[in-house]
Amino acid sequence: MSFNDNIPKLKPYSRSVSIIGVGATPFVRVLDDPSVDGMNEAELFAYAARDAMKDAGITGKDVEFYIHGQAGPGWTSNFATPNMHVANWIGMKGKGSYHHSEACATGYVALETAVMAVASGQYDMVLSGCIEMPYSIAYPTKNLIKRRFGTDAMFHEVLCSTLPRDYTLFTRGALPFNSESWLDHYVNENNISAEDVDAFMTQLSINCRRAAVQNPLSTITNKTYAELAEEAGMDSEYEYLHSKFNPLIGKYMRGAHFEQRCDGAAAVIVCPTEMAYKYTEHPIEVLGVGHSCLENSNPRLEMTATKNAYEQMKALTGLTGKDMDLFLTNDFYNQSELLSAEICEYLPEGEGWQYVKENRIAFDGDRPVNSNGGRCHYGHAAGASGLHDLYEAVHQMRGDSATQVKHEVKHAMLRGFGGAQNLLNIMLEKK
Image 1 (cartoon, rainbow, N blue to C red):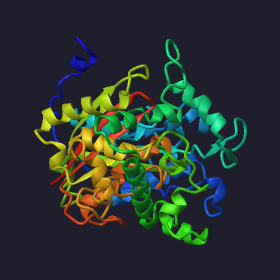
Image 2: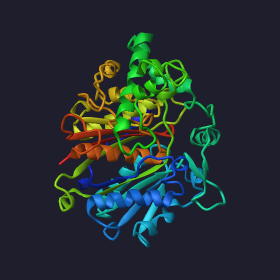
Image 3: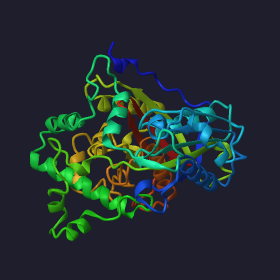
Image 4: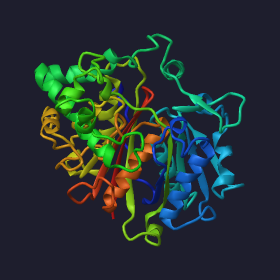
């Protein structure tokens, strides 16, 4: 029996669960921005949580239980029990809560755990939020408003702690040549020329940057590549993206193809769908969550586990990626947008790279992917990013996103990945 045969069949929820509120802070860099300098984890979490409550038309008194997510509380905040640090800020003092951490998949697991709590019948109103400050981390013994820069050396130590070190190299999957393993497999399988690889990778950066610039929550990105090229005295985006400002750091990947670390928080409120109509005319129902975990010794674990999680949801709902109107995915590496979209059948097999070249997966294309700009340009705040994706999906389904797609979004799919471990597939439906 292979591990693929070990994936359980999902069962329907005991009762339907829907999203009635979402909230998010802008993605910021606290140390670099005077307007937010001095803010800490509790304030950012509260901002997102209260934003979600306002969106739902409720207060902390209405919420029965809250869930706190943070990928690296020990590293960024020196917290052992992070959920205890936010209750007073959101009107939840004395109510039940717990904390969880699944590296960069934390935001997706945040939705999954909240939905299960409501689907079980134990609670009717649950708030789930995530906070992360990997760019502006706390000192071990100082007040939390005093921060320091989270260096790559510090991050590497934390990254090593998320990867199995018993029988494998502890950096496996974290270095550029390993980050490219799925892409290299894809290029070889589809006989894509070096010129075409460069063309679609370049277009990915241009598309995502354009979306991030238009998104008000992406405060770390405010100029398109065309504008940056003009400032540098260059003739085109292409010239800029092949210059010293965007060096080649792998076989295919350049600097613009990696995540941009930042600080931020997001939150979601869920309740039974039958109750949700009290708060909104169009609840966003969570149809289910597929979930597969593979540790880092498995070749191309991201590709395989993505397929596992997707196949669970496909069997549960009878829906496929072709039925989705929007696809949002964790893209530590920019190419994950088209690679995961193909695995989840949102894009035709072997043709995703052509969709990129033709601008079809841009937010204003016919098969939009990461309409918020993605982690490489919109920004990445570790455990909070998954709920930022959810925030984007919900607003796209409502029709009021800053980078609104050109067609109605009735179904949306989220593909979450984090920590060389958790892969999730979430399907949403507008009622």
